[in-house]
Length: 101
Ligand code: SF4
Image (tube, rainbow, N blue to C red; front, side, top):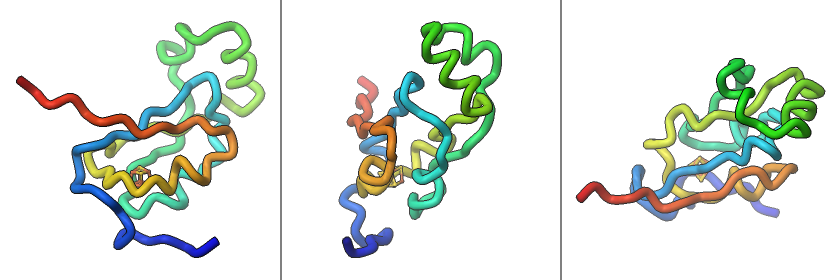
């Protein structure tokens, strides 16, 4: 597989945004490593973020030190898709942002 860089990105920033499935993310950091725009931050879930998760997801989060990825700079996403490809848990999807009316 060839290594892509930011020149492979398909869209201007702000059109798509990465959405992370909290029931899948294990905080393995592949997304943070590969993203050419530094969109992701890996940090611990706050109690408020963990509370709405299912029992199994909370158990899984605990097993991984409560660390997960957050798209802190989602507005910088250029929709290259690298994070979607590298995530070993298939926890990331790109969704088109809604345009304000
Ligand atoms: S698709 Fe993923 S890797 Fe590519 S710019 Fe957006 S957040 Fe970063």
